[in-house]
Image 1: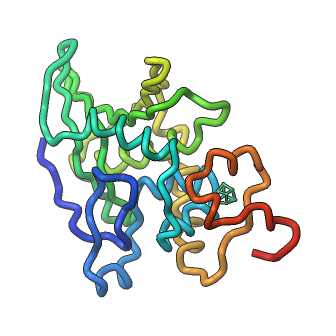
Image 2: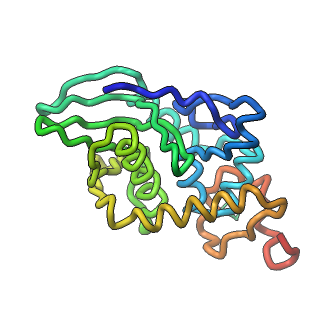
Image 3: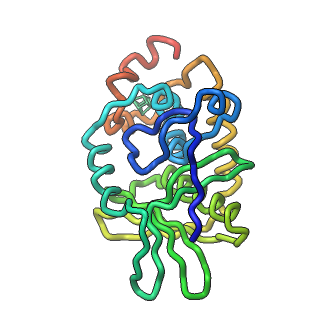
Length: 220
Ligand code: SF4
């Protein structure tokens, strides 16, 4: 599988070592490329995505655990399991959506199907939307780069050794809406409000910088 260089980026991706590095300033300003991982952050909490983009990032137990988990699948190499070719750490981009990132693994099936699989260190939560949108973005990039339909993707949860199969078409519209909303947020000088789902703040890697305890007492 041909890999595509993803050399331009709006900001350095922190805590996601497999992703491309920082972009030239001019291209970053004009292009507004979005890291695929940022879509996951946006789906988790729009405020988190913007704060991470502005580098209000600190490693938490969850992000360190995630980085260690990804290190086990992030190597730019192929291997063969269960009759599949498995491509690791594949650079992806979509020139219309202006998104790019790195797929943990791409399965190449004997019949030619390509299936991106995102690996998560933990277990599936009640709302898997963030991971689902992330892997759907990878699927659309793969379609754009190869010219082949990629109707299926998957999220693999390492803590439970379980796999969630994803219908790409069922989530494509939601993904494109999320990208548009995220791009608006990134352009805005104002931060999105704190999430109303306070349980998400407990696991949030940037809780200290975000100060959710101020929610309801100050405007964002
Ligand atoms: S602490 Fe809560 S409101 Fe702040 S970025 Fe994290 S999840 Fe969002």
